[in-house]
Image 1 (cartoon, rainbow, N blue to C red):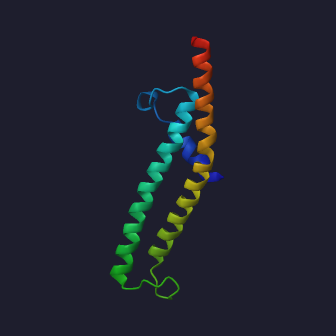
Image 2: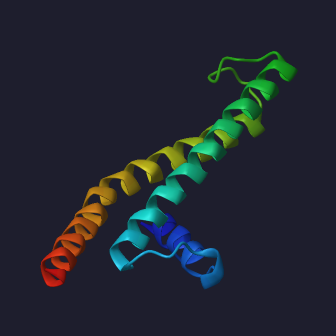
Image 3: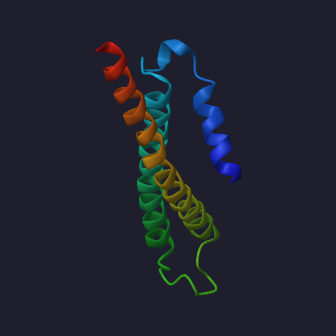
Length: 111
């Protein structure tokens, strides 16, 4: 998916000083969770903006011809973010499995 690579690149390009000190698998799971949290905040903000726009124009019916274009575009963006979150959440168990596997191997090698 194109948005996943966009978000992945955006987070990867952060300076190391801003990144938490985690191993490779843990860092990957952390990045996914961070992106999901950020997207949920944007969705919440979009919901508020959609409601304000609908209240301002007094048109709440999405199928009505006078429904605001800005509200339509915000709804579409919100829906796309929700799809992206679902895709990232589907990747998360795999990233967390990597962490569990690396934790187990570190415990065995330490013994």
